[in-house]
Image (cartoon, rainbow, N blue to C red; front, side, top):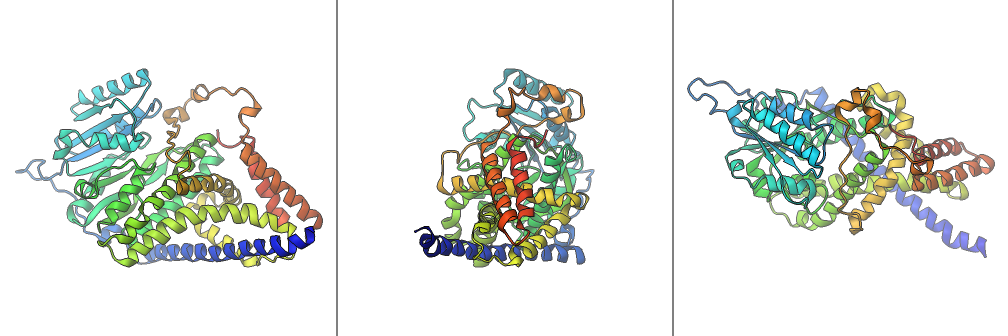
Length: 500
């Protein structure tokens, strides 16, 4: 009975899943190669944004004084940011820009009275130095960050501003940030957004932050730079960018229908045929989550939100009449479907489920190109964005597979609007405590080993370990080498020995 069921039902189903995986593998491979060819083109032909778009520094005018400088609003949304609020507010107030043409708006949703008082005092300190800084609060947290940003736009003084710069609470722009970014918007009326690259001040804290740096460097250097070059469109990162307020208003402003209000705004503005530009050498200092739990919450939001936005905007994109069909195809297929949905599902199910399970089905042949050549090339193309960490590439691959499990879960929740679809947990930040001896005091005491255990990782690790042992005993290939390594990655994550 078992043999009959196996041969008639189970094996054909498994073969079908393998076939689907091979097709998806090729699609991802083609996309990765294409993106990197675009980057190669940018490098070889020196296609920097300053060469593609008009850029001229703003000149002082003795007669007009500062009137030739546009009015800029800087928004800093924050929520109980005890460790970093001084850094972000200070960096924004030190921006090199005429004081009468700059408004710094601190949007404080904090619930801790002590933190609220400290943030208010910090704003008052900079106001006494001549900075036009506004400390704004609201009586609820509806819409989380999007709600705060939307509420901030309702104040009367915003109407006098031409451009909006946004910095999350842990971001610290260099003083010349506006001087380098704003001229793109002044001289190119078709541009709606100038996005800067993130630079990570705590990348060397631990292995977790090093691996995050590898992933995010590829995101900026390849995905965003290629999107800027090919279609003048990419997803806004929610911070370290400058918007043309007229474009935002035309698109309807901030919306809180998903947890990725930044991507939501970018897609709506892009569908109105506005263009975006990414400046790879304009960097803004920021902080990576160094605790595994904080990183998991962040990745849930970053995978659930785009999937939910894809669900809500697909038909709107299809019916849009402002952009050409090729751009619609790019946004639906490449930007959303392949990179925000399929990649997460494929990475987890193929490398952590189908490939390990194949040890029990020796009659189903998985070609070596799909398990070795294609993933190796994709990995190398991704890893070159962070050459200093190239020796960590094996650890990075197996850890990305671990995180693919959480991203897959978040993707399904977003697609089917599950219970945690609008969950927003603020990513914990440590700020200057990273450099001091006060760091241990910031850590919450653990009650024991069980508090560190992550059940999902443990279960996957045990399953992979069983598959590895079976392949070692009965297999005729060397798949068990990978399986033991992947099992170790899940088990190490499962017992909480990741991050600080």
